[in-house]
Image (cartoon, rainbow, N blue to C red; front, side, top):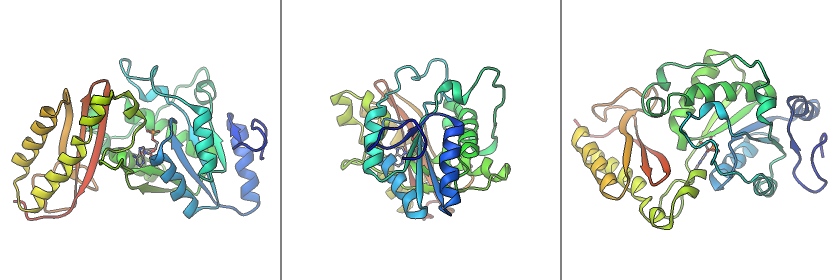
Length: 294
Ligand code: AMP
C-alpha cells in the first residue's frame, strides 16, 4: 500500500492532489513509468481495456474516477450519472491497476476556481455542437489530471473519437509532456459499444441499440463499394430513426485526422454518430478507409 486512504488487501484509493503526487513520486524514485487512465467510473470492459493498454506500456497504472461537473450542461445527466465506486475499485484491482485516484469536486475545483482550457478547431461540430459545454470541461479536467499525476502516457478510448483528437490538440498546443494513446472501442457481442450510459436503456431499448453500429458498418461497406456519400448517409440516418431512436444529434463523415466534413472517401475518414434512444444518448464511430466513392 502506498500512502493513506486504502484498506490492506484492496486497491489503494487516494482523494487528494498531494496524495496522488506523493504516491507517484515514490514510483518515480524507483525509476518506474506511469500510465494514467481517466474515467468517470461505473467501469466496464472498455475502461479495463484502457488499463490493460496502459499496463503494456508502463510499469504502473493509475485510474482516475471523477464525474466532472463542468462538462455537463444544465439539463444533462450529471445528477443521475451512474456510480459504483466500490465495484469500480474491485474491477480495477482485478485488472492489475496500481492506484485509484478519486478526488472530490471540492479538491478538483476549490472555491475561487476560475480557469478554463478552450480548444477550437476539432472541438467544433459533432459533440461540440450538441453539447457546447463538454469539450471545454473535458480539456480543463484532463489538463488538471495530467498536471496532478504527470504520467508518461495517458490512455483514452476511440469510442469518444472527437475527444481523443481534442485531447491530442491541447496537449500539443500546451506542450504537456505526455504521450496520448487511443485504444479501440470494446463492444458487446451484438456490436453495441460498451458505455456507462447503456445502463439507462430499458430491455426493449437494449434490443434496438445495436442498430447504431450495424448501420455504421453497413454504410462503410456501401461507401467502399462506391456509394455516394450524401445518399448513403441519408439512408443510414433514416434507418436509425426507423429502428426506434427518437433523435439524431448527428451522423456525419469526417476526415479522420482533422474532423473536417468529407464529401467523398478520397482520404481516411471516420463515420460518427450520436443518437437518442429513450433516456440514453448513444455515440459511436467507425473508420472509413479510402474507397471508390465519388
Ligand atoms: P467515461 O468513463 O465514459 O468518461 O470513459 C472513460 C474512458 O473510457 C474514455 O477515454 C472513453 O473513451 C473510454 N471508453 C468508454 N467506453 C469505451 C469502450 N466501449 N471501449 C473503449 N474505451 C471506452
